[in-house]
Figure 1 (tube, rainbow, N blue to C red):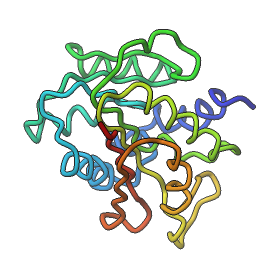
Figure 2: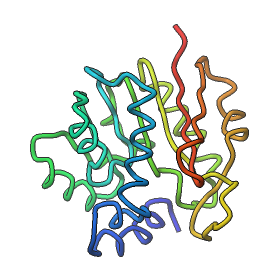
Figure 3: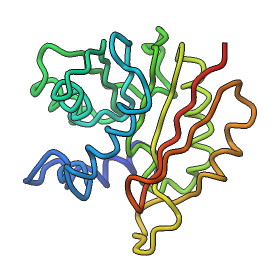
Figure 4: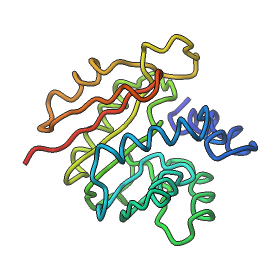
Length: 200
């Protein structure tokens, strides 16, 4: 089964379900989803920045930033057309694109900040390679900072559908890039965030 099919098969039942946006994206709760967004907001100066949200889902990051009066030039991209359709309906004045960042020529411009929340959670069978490829794209496509979160291997109640890793392992993947790396892992037991600021 290919990457897109695996993602589509996992998320489609959730997307078509009921409840909050967070539950329809397979998050535990809106609180946990927003805790992840808060790490980005508190550690990266986003005001006035161009922001690429990879795996944007319904555009909940944009809602969170608007509620916290953070003004960004936002672009959301997702590999699933259904996600983008819903995101556009919810945010008709904002920019959303159905893009596979690995295979599309549409992602031509560079952004000040690139971000991915939950993008690496699903066990794809080759997550280490997947993460390396995204890091490489983020490094090339950002002017200042890229950030992403992952599920922490210390979590005791692991589920078979998900991928868990450690800050130490991710630090090893970032060794070849000229950036300062910050790991934040004190906000949720099952999560940590990586923030990479490019050196000038």
